[in-house]
Length: 62
Image (cartoon, rainbow, N blue to C red):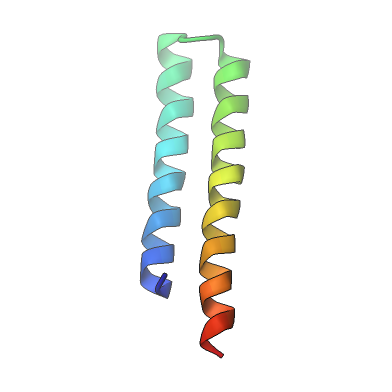
């Protein structure tokens, strides 16, 4: 994964997580606390997976 792809993927993931939290809170899908917790978990786990995938590729370049 190139640096630019990692940057765009992480930015997109962040936007999706924020949209989930904001829209879920506004529309009251499951309750504000659960929407925020699920959004944060999704963001942390997704970001960690992206970082791991990008890092493995980055280390193999050197």
